[in-house]
Length: 214
Image (cartoon, rainbow, N blue to C red; front, top):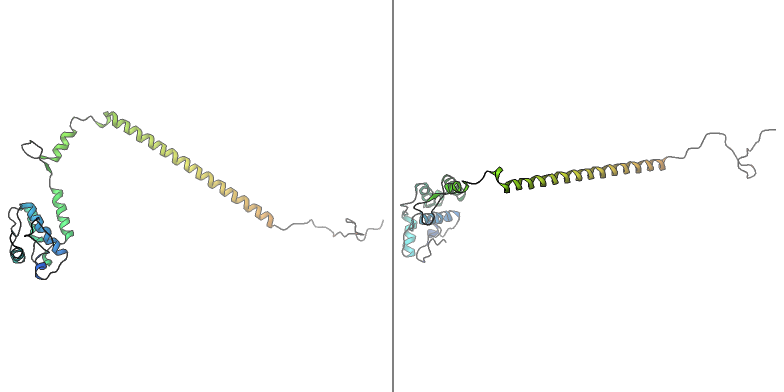
């Protein structure tokens, strides 16, 4: 239940369905939002004041007081205060419509002692008038130099990192190739020169078993 004004005798509730059946839901929140927006736009409670039961009857069957609401908001408030939940827009639809309205509006500022409000755009323009151009501002030039130095350091650091990664990769590849060659050499069988078999004679190596006749 939503209390629109800080008064105990005015409750919007959760829409007419909240008073009739006690049903609550997003549609009831939309109804309360419409009543709040009507009060903010006019300064009047859309269903008046009085005892809670009297206000409840107005919410269920009476028409809200929407006189004085700006035209661009009137359609939103009217749809939000529809008597049946099915006729009310969703929160997403209302958010989209409000965004469009805000984008089309111009914000004004009422300064103390001013005869009338001033557009924010005019205030910004007046504040920028008389300022030096960016290329003539020493602070801006110094900032550009700092950015250029920082960019140079970043490029140098990236180059050093790339060189280190490339060197480490080359070393690992070369070391891997050397390990492969050593493993191949160990796995190859020993080869002996071809020739007549020589036997030992009398336990002396290097002598033929059947020496040639002298």
